[in-house]
Structures are given as structure tokens and as C-alpha cells.
Length: 514
Ligand code: C2O
Image 1: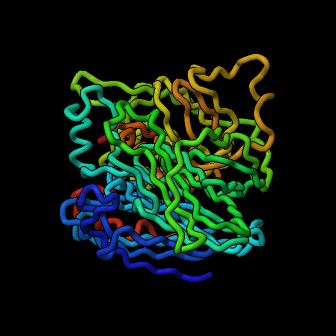
Image 2: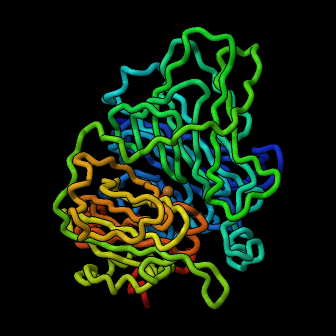
Image 3: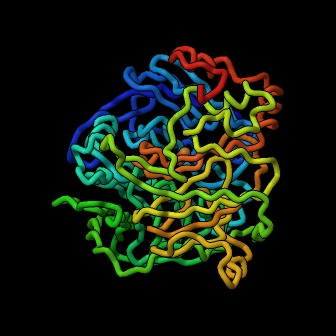
């Protein structure tokens, strides 16, 4: 295994990725789009960050990585670290022991849609699919706003932009951060196409004109191959597909990412929900016409079977029920709730409270009432029951794990009823699909299961950035006493991490609620 070292100087640059508006974006080393992190399973990754934004603090999260033994490297601000203030340095240092398609992004309030988001690919010499393809292609799809997030968030919260309280609608949509992507391919070959939705809000329907996709990986989990005409990627989801090119053709083909307009409160005049790239067989031939939204059935990810056929966890040790609600409170601002509580960032990062409270770390009270904290014991089967009391779609993500999706209702099913007859477990799949981000349907429900085998402080949140800002987050404090001994055997929190707190006058010890 290698050590991969990256020096990332994070700062503002200008860009005009859709050709419609030049705006400041957050780049790395003077460049935007930011680099792809590309490593091999087993590598140690060292990322030396310098925050040169000047006006904003920042952080990096490596979406989907388990950070086993390194929860302090997970990235979310006020959870496992302090925000990195302008002018400060901060090093992320961890080993990656899992293969697949991931991404990295800022985990500071509402910041990544300003451009601080990039692919993270972990190659696997032992991939069960490696003999099935010749080359790899990475495609990121994302919605795009012409305005910066800070004013958009302020306006959303002040209800000026959207009197209805609805989320701002994106101005356009990008593939690999552009609207003009040509992908050169050769006839008679098979490509592994890794797809990532790095957007803030919109789900993306993705299809290739006249080419079938064969799904082989979902959020880092290898699957039994299955064919799909069209995929739906919520914000933060990933798929890898095998795409076999034609042996003979005299033209080029389009591929399309199409934003899910059902999420939008209004559809502004002139909004083009699609971004079209082209598969180029022959450079001298024309760009294909963008296809109309085709009459494809989107692929149902619930039918996927993990390649390792991990059986369902059928004995649940600890069940956590979360009822989701969105509301505008008396102050006129938009909030999101789990069990009637909206998440508020604690003053002391939750991990630091774990480390400073000794034996009390197992008592959820020490994490404050507004962190929606749940303390998990080690090595249990944990079930999350998620009930949607809102008529919107919500893509939910758990840090530090993937989870079995054992049940997902359609729209309007109401709350999950565990005592339904026949027992719902009879209808659960025996080898459920696992992933780290899953769609909760409007007024529907979800049942997720995982084993608490990874001590750490892990967020569980909707990956729509507007909803993160509105407080749609819970905190799992998993095996807090094991976290304490892990960190003490590493010599405690690194000095540069503590320095970030010091520079921002954030206390690093004590009671989060205090
Ligand atoms: Cu993509 Cu909390 O993360």
C-alpha cells in the first residue's frame, strides 16, 4: 500500500461552467473543478489543507468512507472537528480499506454546492468485475446555482426568494462540472462508468442513448450485475455500470442527466432540467441531438443483491425511530425536525464531548438536547425506522457505515407499523441491498439496519443541503468508551485539529449543552 499525499490550498476562483453566469467558486490550488482523489484500496491518504478562502471557514468529508479507527478524520464541522478558520492549516490522515466510488465535499454549513466537491475513487485489484471491462470513466452529475450559498441560504431562511418556504430551484445542471462534455470511446470495448450525484438538491435521472447499463456497484458495494435502461441518483448516491460500446456505428450518441423536477416547487421559465454529454465514436461526426426524456422506467435499487450476499440482520438489538417533519415556525423561518427537534450545531464538537466526559459519555444528555443524539452500544444490530411526515423526497445518508435497506414503502404509505400482519419481516428481502444513501419517499417510510461495529461519532442526515441547513440531522454516538480508548491509543486529537478550535475560540472540552 502507498501513502498518497495531497496539498490542498482551498480558495475562491471564478468560473462559468454553464456558460450563463460567471461567479466565484471554491477551488483547490487555483483550479476548479477540484481534483479527483484516486487511490488503491489499502492506501493511506494524507491531505494537507490550507484554508485560503479569507471569508469562510471550511472542512472536508469523504462521503461513504468508514473511517474505521479514525472518526476524528470524518470531517463534519462541530461533530468530529471544528471548522477550519480562514488562514488555518489542517491535516486529514486515514487509511482506506474499502473499494468503490465515493466523493469528497465540504461539510461546513451549506458550502459544497459552491464547488468544493469532487470524486474519490478507490481502485480494487481484487474487484470481482475487473475482468469485465477495459477502461474506466468517471461522470459526476450535479445541479448548479448562479448565486452563492450564503445569500441563497439567508434568503431561503428569510423567505424572500421563496414565500412558500420552498428550496431554491437550481439554474442548471452539469456533468463533470461542465455542459460540454465529450467522452471519447472506442468500438467493441467495455467501460466501467462510475457515476456520482454531487448536487445540492436535485435527483438525477441518467440514461445513455441506445446503450444499456449493467449495474455492478452501488455506493461502494459490489452487486450481482443487473441491466438498467435508466438510473435515478439522489444527491450523494453513486452507481458503477458496465457499458459495452457498439462494434460498428457511423454516429455518436448522447447521454443525459435530467433533474427530477418533482422536487421543485416551481419550474422557472427557461429552466433546462437536462445536461447532455456525448459518447464520441468518431471525432469528425456531429454532436448527437439531445434526446427527449425517454419513457424509461427508472431502475429500482431495492432489487439489487450485494455480491457478497450478506444475509439480513434479522435480530434487532436497538431500534431508533425518527419521525420527519418540515415546518415554518413563528419566526417565519424554515425548519426540519426529527421527533419534533431540529438539529442545532453544538458549541463543542460532539466527538470532543465524548473524549472529555469520561464514563458519562454513554449518557445522551451530555450531547445537548438539540443534537438529536443517540448512543449506541458496540456490536449490536441497530435499526433505524424513518417515517416521513412531509410530502417531499429525502435522500438519507449515514456516516461511518452502509446499511441494509430492509424495507422501503412507496409514496403516501404513512408511518411504518412494525406489528403489521403478516409480520413485515416475512416480506423483507433475505439478502437486502446495502448502500450509504437511500431515498425516503414522500409521506413514506424506510427501515434500515446496520451493525454497530465501527466506534465513532456519525451523522445521519438528509443530503439535500437546504434540509441540512434546516436541521434535518441526527447524531449517532457509537461505542463512546471505545472511541475514548481508540483516540487515547493514537495520542489524542492531533494538535492541528485543536488549533482550528483555538483559532475560532471554540472550547474543546466540556458539556456540549453548556
Ligand atoms: Cu456527503 Cu454528511 O455527507
